[in-house]
Length: 292
Ligand SMILES: [Zn+2]
Ligand SMILES: [Zn+2]
Image (cartoon, rainbow, N blue to C red; front, side, top):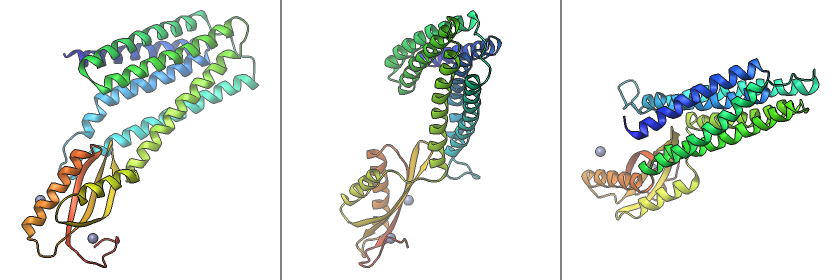
């Protein structure tokens, strides 16, 4: 196995261990902070599994039943993950709030402290390791994984501080740390959901991308104007179609070649653009942007 694959697999193993330890010990020793930290690790774990399985499905080439490809499979799976995370986070926040207004929460056991400590160290080592491997392979995925591991390490620091303070006489510190971590988990969940809603709803690319498409098309000799540029988000990319007006007397062959060249140039210059469909039409002075 490549060291890149090994790094991803090692991260998966460590995350699995941490999730089991944090949720198990969090429940057993009644630490809201450790439970919330465990929920955060669980989301990472599901994310890692997605990376291994989900994206493979999304990258499946188009087939007869799905001529536009399978990119949205990833969106649906991510939205499901986001929804589960959000419900989990709300449950944890409710649990913490309950501790503030209900009975004084129990003091978390020493094991909770130890697990949070182990998590800080392991996640930190993981961050350093992923950063090193990522640099070696110039992998953005591993670099992002490294940044994530460092932020997880910081999350566990918050849990550790909460648990420690609860143990030395400030019982509300644990649910407070738990609530803070749970709010962070909820934020991630909402971000995941909204990003993928954009994709399912065919959201357009930002205006500067559309302007760049128009600019690129108009640099081609023979293009009289480009209009009706429609972009739609699909997975991590945008697919698009556009109208190009050309001189009325060029041949079908010339128009066809021009259309393909424009499409290729747009894809080359704007990596976020996936598929381009160019509709060629003769120059019509009164033609508006309403299509046809
Ligand atoms: Zn048109
Ligand atoms: Zn063609």
